[in-house]
Image: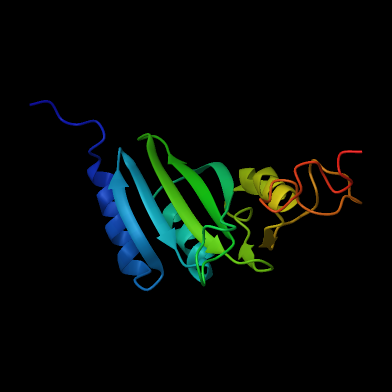
Length: 165
């Protein structure tokens, strides 16, 4: 029987190492479809990203996305989920690291580890209002400086603040 290309023992080893090092901070973890998927507490984000880069070999930052959980987070849930996409080459391994963050809270910036996270964090700040502590230049990237609000939030009016006028 041919080996399943999605079965990557290196990812299971990375998950075990991460879970061992950050036992209380790894809220969930799995290896599925050839990808490492981890949900972390926000306080462990910077240390876990450093661990994944320096010891796990995830040497490239692919992307960052934000999900607005408004109305679906449930009681006590956080407003946003921020997902980091990391890549390891050589080896073609992928990791997805998810962190929940509340309204008005901030996350540690990934820019000191991954310079390419710069514009992705600025975009998340501009469109959703998620702040990144330690970012070297956290300012709007698309919207004018005087613009009020964050247009990709679920509670932002579809017609805009002025009713589309």
